[in-house]
Every structure is written in C-alpha cells, then in structure tokens.
Amino acid sequence: MILLRKAKEEDIPIIQDLAQNTWPAAYAEVIGTAQIEYMLEKMYNKGELLSQLQQGHIFLIAESGGQDLGFAGFSVIDSENRIYKLHKLYVLPEAHGKGIGKILINEVLSQVKAFGGTALQLNVNRANKAADFYKKGGFVIKETVDLDIGNGFFMNDYVMEKQL
Image (cartoon, rainbow, N blue to C red):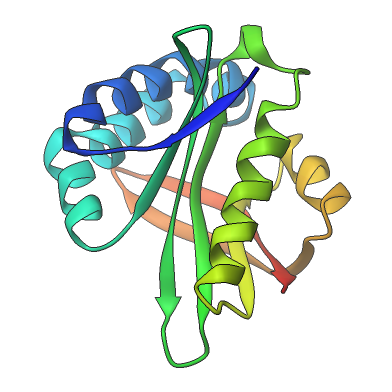
C-alpha cells in the first residue's frame, strides 16, 4: 500500500536524499553528471527547499512499508488565472513501474482542483522519457524552452500543461 504525506520542514533531508537517489537514473544520459551535481546543489540545498516551503510549495512524499519511495512538489504560479506548477516529481528507480508516479500526479491534480486551479503546468527535459508519462496523463506540450541555469548549463525543456 502506498501512503502519501504532506512534507514538513523536518522532511527536507528525506526530499534531498530521494533527489540524490533519483536524479542520476533520470538524467545521467540526458544532461551528464556535472550538470546533475550542479542542479542538485542549486535546487535541493536546505535553504532553497525551506524557502519553497515557506513560499507555499506543497511537497508530498510517497511511502510504503515505512520506506520513502518518491515525492512531488507543486505551487501556484499565477494566482489571478489559478495556474499551478508541478515543480518536482521523482520516484526511486527500484520503485518504478509500481504506479507511484501516477498516484503522486493524481493527488497533485486532485489538490490543485480542490484549490480552484484551472491548469497544472510542468517542465520536462525534452530527452526525458517522463515526457511520455505526462502525455499519457493528458498533458500537452505548450512550448519548448531553453533555460540558462548558470555555469554554462541549460535546461532544454518542454513546458507541458493539463487543463483542469
């Protein structure tokens, strides 16, 4: 059985650990080790995650049998038009294929709808097979972007959206 819980400040090390253990499998062939290390430090340091929590980001952690297996993070990005963004969704490689990603995305969609959201957006690397996961879930490609994240690194993403 998969249980979801809303993360609190004391869960930051769990989110960091899950990111450290999911990113190499998700991105090694796509962006390489140097960019993975740079992005993990930039996006998953304690101060950044704490700031996100304080700004209203909601993190959900998926667990089974007392083991944390994955997480999702989302927030409102356009309060006037009630558009939300899925910032993060990662599942440990050994837990792939068990429906955990689907459970997480469905709960995010459910919460966004409950908050009155009209759409959920996300960025996904154009070479990441997760794009197919989102397409199957009803997300459509809204635009293609190349984001300069510093240190000579870029995120070559699709911006995808699902209307609610």
